[in-house]
Length: 101
Ligand SMILES: [Zn+2]
Image 1 (cartoon, protein in one colour):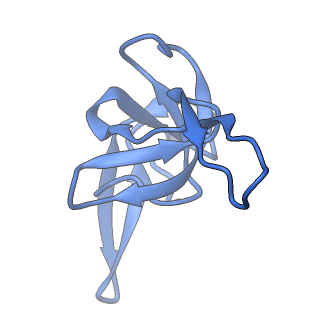
Image 2: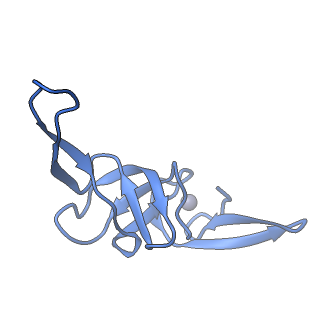
């Protein structure tokens, strides 16, 4: 996965196209990410105790990582991610400004 938790992304397809957000979860096995305020779905929560009512809560649902592009923290542009290897460490590089992030 090129996208990591905490990254800024922009949605490039679907209902949330053009929206930016912060990645809060990464699900590598599914190829999906969860982003704050993106892909919100209503969920019914069951009452926790007897006598309580169930609630409808909105949560951010996972969506396909291919529908998002990373936003470079240096140049603030949507970019593809390259890799640089330095002293055996792999770091991600912005293809637009060539800075590591
Ligand atoms: Zn950049």
